[in-house]
Length: 89
Image 1 (cartoon, rainbow, N blue to C red):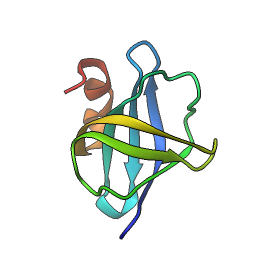
Image 2 (image 1 turned 90 degrees about the vertical axis):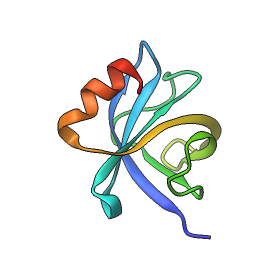
Image 3 (image 1 turned 180 degrees about the vertical axis):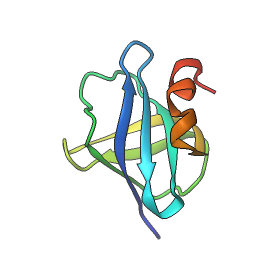
Image 4 (image 1 turned 90 degrees about the horizontal axis):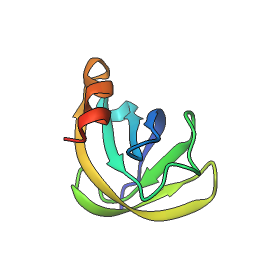
Protein backbone atom coordinates (compact mmCIF):
# COMPACT_ATOMS: atom_id res chain seq x y z
CA UNK A 1 0.00 0.00 0.00
CA UNK A 2 1.30 3.47 -0.84
CA UNK A 3 2.35 5.66 2.04
CA UNK A 4 1.69 9.38 2.04
CA UNK A 5 4.18 11.62 3.82
CA UNK A 6 3.97 15.24 4.76
CA UNK A 7 5.56 17.87 6.94
CA UNK A 8 3.71 19.73 9.69
CA UNK A 9 3.61 23.37 8.61
CA UNK A 10 1.11 24.92 11.05
CA UNK A 11 -0.48 24.08 14.41
CA UNK A 12 -3.41 25.58 16.29
CA UNK A 13 -2.61 24.27 19.77
CA UNK A 14 -5.86 25.55 21.28
CA UNK A 15 -8.02 23.45 18.95
CA UNK A 16 -5.37 20.73 18.30
CA UNK A 17 -5.71 21.30 14.54
CA UNK A 18 -2.66 20.61 12.38
CA UNK A 19 -1.79 21.46 8.78
CA UNK A 20 0.47 18.93 7.04
CA UNK A 21 2.04 19.84 3.69
CA UNK A 22 2.02 16.98 1.17
CA UNK A 23 4.47 17.74 -1.64
CA UNK A 24 3.14 15.06 -4.02
CA UNK A 25 -0.29 16.74 -3.89
CA UNK A 26 1.06 20.30 -3.56
CA UNK A 27 -1.50 20.94 -0.84
CA UNK A 28 -2.14 20.59 2.87
CA UNK A 29 -4.03 17.99 4.84
CA UNK A 30 -5.84 19.36 7.89
CA UNK A 31 -6.33 17.02 10.80
CA UNK A 32 -7.48 17.20 14.39
CA UNK A 33 -5.54 15.51 17.17
CA UNK A 34 -6.68 14.66 20.68
CA UNK A 35 -3.88 16.90 21.92
CA UNK A 36 -1.33 19.11 20.18
CA UNK A 37 1.21 18.74 23.00
CA UNK A 38 3.49 16.20 21.27
CA UNK A 39 3.74 17.66 17.76
CA UNK A 40 5.82 20.48 16.33
CA UNK A 41 6.22 22.36 13.07
CA UNK A 42 8.67 20.35 10.96
CA UNK A 43 7.55 16.92 12.20
CA UNK A 44 7.12 14.34 9.44
CA UNK A 45 3.78 12.54 9.34
CA UNK A 46 2.96 9.38 7.38
CA UNK A 47 -0.29 7.56 6.62
CA UNK A 48 -1.57 4.84 4.32
CA UNK A 49 -5.19 5.94 3.96
CA UNK A 50 -4.47 8.34 1.09
CA UNK A 51 -7.15 11.02 0.90
CA UNK A 52 -9.65 9.31 3.20
CA UNK A 53 -11.50 11.58 5.62
CA UNK A 54 -12.74 10.96 9.15
CA UNK A 55 -10.92 8.88 11.74
CA UNK A 56 -7.64 7.51 10.36
CA UNK A 57 -4.35 6.18 11.71
CA UNK A 58 -1.43 8.61 11.25
CA UNK A 59 2.20 8.19 12.33
CA UNK A 60 4.55 10.91 13.51
CA UNK A 61 7.89 9.63 12.20
CA UNK A 62 9.82 12.41 13.93
CA UNK A 63 8.48 11.72 17.42
CA UNK A 64 7.83 7.99 16.97
CA UNK A 65 4.13 7.80 17.83
CA UNK A 66 1.02 6.60 16.02
CA UNK A 67 -2.49 7.86 16.76
CA UNK A 68 -6.04 7.89 15.52
CA UNK A 69 -6.72 11.39 14.19
CA UNK A 70 -9.74 13.05 12.61
CA UNK A 71 -8.91 14.06 9.03
CA UNK A 72 -10.88 17.18 8.15
CA UNK A 73 -9.80 17.97 4.59
CA UNK A 74 -7.11 17.39 1.94
CA UNK A 75 -5.74 19.64 -0.80
CA UNK A 76 -5.83 22.93 1.10
CA UNK A 77 -3.80 25.73 -0.51
CA UNK A 78 -1.18 27.46 1.65
CA UNK A 79 -3.12 30.74 1.41
CA UNK A 80 -6.16 29.10 3.05
CA UNK A 81 -4.39 26.99 5.67
CA UNK A 82 -4.59 29.39 8.62
CA UNK A 83 -8.34 29.88 8.10
CA UNK A 84 -8.87 26.11 7.96
CA UNK A 85 -7.02 25.66 11.24
CA UNK A 86 -9.21 28.28 12.90
CA UNK A 87 -12.59 27.02 11.72
CA UNK A 88 -11.78 23.33 11.40
CA UNK A 89 -13.71 22.76 8.18
